[in-house]
Image (cartoon, rainbow over all chains, first blue to last red; front, side, top):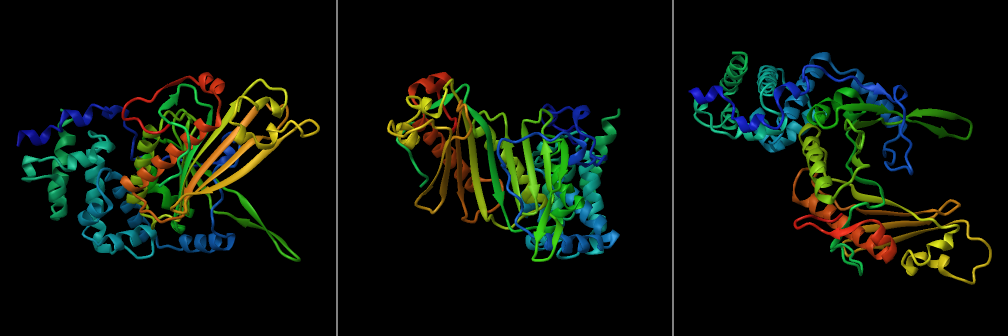
Length: 179
Length: 260
């Protein structure tokens, strides 16, 4: 049990927690007008291949998305961002969904069921706590480490649907870091 | 098999004349990337390395017989490193990584691998419609007209510049060459002198394919881009003469290091 509370030191060495970005703050997006534009020697990135009509139509559709649905997709995207080191297919297993359906959720061509709210919220909180101590780039390594309290790896526990157990482990990490 | 040129790439340069190196992966449009929420996951995944984000919007003009109408274009989301030497662009149908501080192919591909991994997890595009690697070299020499490049560059490359019988002052000479390899992938070579007083010679190499590849970290895209980098390095080596070669600080390629 004691090993559970101590995240492996080598996972922390690269990026001390005090240098990690604050992931609770969504960085501001500034318009191009706010900053000086670096002049380019040539046009290096060509324009996109979709028409103005397609842009306008898609923007109208995005504006009319239900707020609860938007929040669900937003949380899913943050969870997927936090799973560095997992493949898309592994992340789908954790979420209990087929990869193709997960892609449709991300593309907003299929709605995420309300029943996934608690899973998404727990995963988001678990990753938030974990990343207070372990850098994002080491998430995959941590998920594959044997954790005695879980009788296996966090990834195995997540795939088995024991998200609450893994969340409790990261909560204990967070509590121990303040001792 | 990518194109091979009659020059060895066993040498790398300490001070290569690279202006910019850019790789771009195009995929079928994902319209959620039009708005900020669609980009949020990707931003979260890469913002430790690319903390700054700018939204670049360009308006297009629709020209009809009786009307000129401004049309909204898809935005390009530009993420940059703190030192602004690495620029990552994302839009509805492409991701591109651009380096103003390119060191070698391994470093570049490692960074791009992480971008592809973040893209795969948070956006998951369908297989690619185009993949390209572009290296823009800007050679500088103290010459007073375009003919001054004779002796510095491979005569084949110089073409008309190398012809003594051409009358008048040669103000500019710019050529476009397209070579196809056995896969149908193409190397677009744009080179020449565009402006007087001709002190800059541009060698712009863009190797690309329209074959589909899975957009994810892994061997396939990395091997493709490494092969393109190798071909472009070989072409560059073949293009320049000994004097320029020594000016750029040639050194033996370190073991296990890929193309420059």
